[in-house]
Image 1 (cartoon, helix red, strand yellow):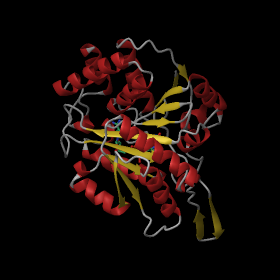
Image 2 (cartoon, protein in one colour):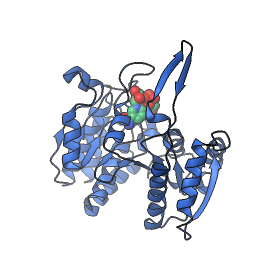
Image 3 (tube, protein in one colour):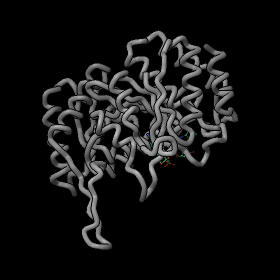
Image 4 (cartoon, helix red, strand yellow):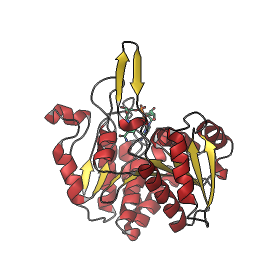
Length: 328
Ligand code: NAI
């Protein structure tokens, strides 16, 4: 499989995940490839062709976070990876993790984010100095495809309701097309309840009473924002995993970024990346190994020996790793 250690805390948490997967007997051999800032230092390119070719060949990648410079510099490697490999569905389960204190208990919802278009098209230009135009692309094709993914996911995983999140009251054409496309798909799934909420109200409802949601279906920008918000409901960015899924390839990564504020300090929480690896094992139909890793992680978190600072403990990334391995 392809492994991208990434930037910031990426190399620390990917090393932890690789050690734990090995101890769990996952039997994975890795092709290590660069992306992001570290890659620029090594090869001058943020996303070298060899990294893409490797994922196209292995079809499965575990990826650490990569840094994107703010307001300048190279374009987001994440966006480029998702667009180039057509990883159209971003799946982010938001679930309580045993042993991790959270604002809500028994939360179990799923964020389904369209991953290839919207304001992440990257098309923006200066009209005249002081005026900038950013172009939001919404297509019926991509909106229909992500809606089908969400409703199929709901059906296969026994979920009862899909909520379409949008801002079609203001962006009548673009979000209007997203909403209409999703509603058209919903009509073909009479067994799944559907409703829609305007994105600002969705934020408030999520904070006040998140249990009213089951599957959230959003475009790229709203999905990005709402998944960070939702991760805060179950203990923070350190514990929420994710998957970027396409027809041919899949890239598994946590919701969080490269956390430059704690990089190199040995205190990053590998839980989110490890849970992404568990999603990867399930994608590979290795349920037995997925369960082994999950059980060991949850036991170590409940005991407290794997609880890092972000979730109220004192464990370092190293003690986290040793603690989960000892449970295995
Ligand atoms: P961030 O997610 O890296 O960090 C936000 C806060 O959460 C920080 O205080 C950080 O210390 C904490 N945090 C995040 N992950 C943690 C973990 N595993 N353990 C303990 N604490 C953790 O978001 P930020 O600072 O906005 O972005 C930093 C960089 O990451 C930016 O360049 C951004 O573009 C990039 N990024 C990359 C992503 C990816 O590769 N998929 C996703 C999101 C951001």
